[in-house]
Amino acid sequence: MSVVFQSSSGWVLDSLSLINRGYQQCIRWADSDKSHVKCCFKWRCFQILKSRYNLSGGAAVEGEHSDVLHKTDKPSKKRKRKHSELNQGEIDSKAFHEKIRSVILEGTKLLVDSARSLGYLTGETDTVEEPLPSQECSLAALCEMAKELPLVEDEEQKECIQLLATEDGCAAHVDLFSQVTENKEDWAAVVTMMGEEYVIPPNTAFLLSDFTRIQPLVQCGRKFDLIVIDPPWENKSVKRSRRYSFLPSTQLKRLPVPQLSSSGCLLVTWVTNRPSHLRFVRDELYPHWGVQVVAEWFWLKVTTSGQFVFPLDSQHKKPYEVLILGRCPTNTSTRSSERPEIEDKRLIVSVPSALHSQKPSLSEVLKPYVGAEAKCLELFARSLQPGWTSWGNEVLKFQHVSYFNVTPADTFKDETTDDCAQKPARPNTFLLLHNGQYLRQCNQSLKPMMH
Image (cartoon, rainbow, N blue to C red):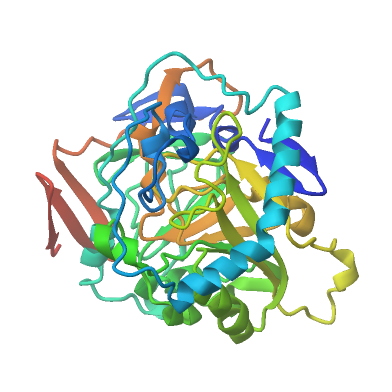
């Protein structure tokens, strides 16, 4: 069950179940052969067993929890401070934490205790050992390379949306960079793109591009009732690790949210605990788009036994992240009374992923506020969701087949019958059509090639 428990305080989510709900029925295409499979995201990614309460000092790796996968009492190295005085940012962070501390502490206890009474967050784990996936993601590099190719003018773009697979069920030779790709089937598909296998959920659409090539998403003309944004916030840890490229806060104002949002669209932004980022979203970003802030929620990260993954009062790393919810302007034809009121200071409790920057799906908790038939969009996405549209320069990252256990399954209804006649690409090489041109990858090197 994806939502384990719900109350006025918030929700307890089973993130793994939320991911797996779209992959019970799946078709895998390999060359010209079709098979029915079941895909399950690897459970090992959510086996966070140890709280940092039991480790001495030190800040954890930014955004990752792989160090608490294993039960170890080895102390981590503590970074020395040059001085003991708090800077203004630290003072603001402390004040913000004290303001919300009681809400988080009391609410989390209530939700965790309730989940335990239902047999969840009891610390029980599977005894089968399974290594963490370690797939190297080169999608962002491909997006950078694609920027060398000319932009497609609006009048030259025949279709803004392309199907993931052709009518006979073959995996299409798709242009991932300048067109939105859509799987319109009611089942998931394991398809080969760019020489790699990816698991694509049912009824989903996506665009693989960076910030400068988001225009095809706007050109589709779709308006969304829910937009979730997970920006690559700039911070010192990201700069040190170079784990992913960040975006200066002011650049977020260039996102085409007004063109993508429907009347009264619900906008949700993931924000780090840095006070300057929180103030920017509340006081600059949302007002720039005409969005009214309506609530502030918190994602609480706990272990499989229900403990905070980091001490609540840790000076280095907090066990929570913030979500700022806002409403876009409403047309006179849309009555605001038709929408349920969004409560402030609600909590979302879940076991986080050990994979960097993999957030829990918000689809189930937000459904009452946007409706079951709402059109949903995620910006800066690193994965896909059934029924959603997703955009980002790593939008397929966690869809790589290496993150899934793929097992044979019985056939299901509405299956396609025609065989795929497309020939497989040569080993270590992919050809990717992009506006009449090709990108080639040979032996892990990335080079553009004119067609």
